[in-house]
Amino acid sequence: MSIHPILNPNSKSNEWRWVSEDPSGKSESSLPEPKETSTQVKNIKTTLGKVAEEFLSLQKSFEEMALKNADNERMVNSLIKERSDLVQENGQLRRQTADLQECYAKLQHLVNCLTQENAQLQDLTSNLQHGNGQLRNSVSHFQRENGQLRSSVNHFRSENSRLQHLVKYWESAHLSLWLEKNEMQQKRQKQERDCSEPHEKPS
Image (cartoon, rainbow, N blue to C red; front, side, top):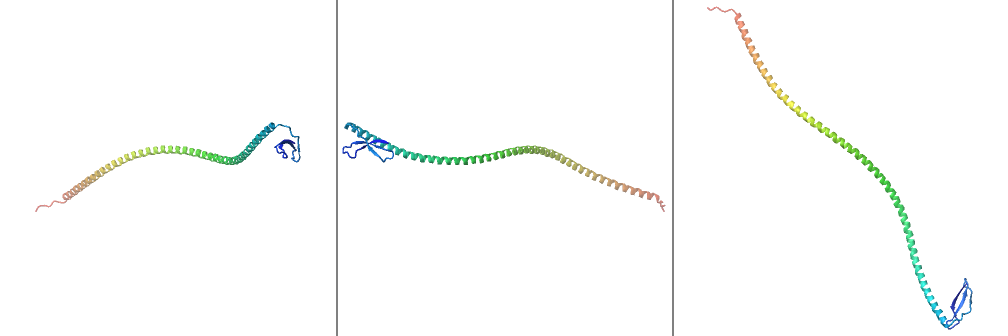
């Protein structure tokens, strides 16, 4: 039950009277009016006016706080939604990070394979360069031998030409000797025939 002052509706001088009200608000009973002086009544009225103003101010503040609370609630709901979106985006980023880590592992494996293959290619290149150097040395050696063989062939050709001239000279000399011998033999045979025949007596 609450007790509060109200204006007396039957009074023409704005007198106050105390009333009591139960929680259900159905019953009301008048209490004896306090005996106060007009100054006290004025002070009470002034105080009540200030209280009413303060109450209105508080009510306005409450309304403003309610509006702010509604704004804050909307902001909180927006933040909750944003947090939900961020959580969802975080999940997507985690999955993308896992995919990127898997892709990075594959790329790292590929880099290792390429590095190993590059080392093998470098070894092969070194071996080929060494073999190429040996081949160049062999080519130079064969070129020197080829030059020597060409010199030998030229020498043999020159010697062969000289021998051919010599053979022709000997053949010519042999033919001359054979003709001379044949001619001498024919002369001797003729002389022998002449000597074997009887000489004719002069008449």
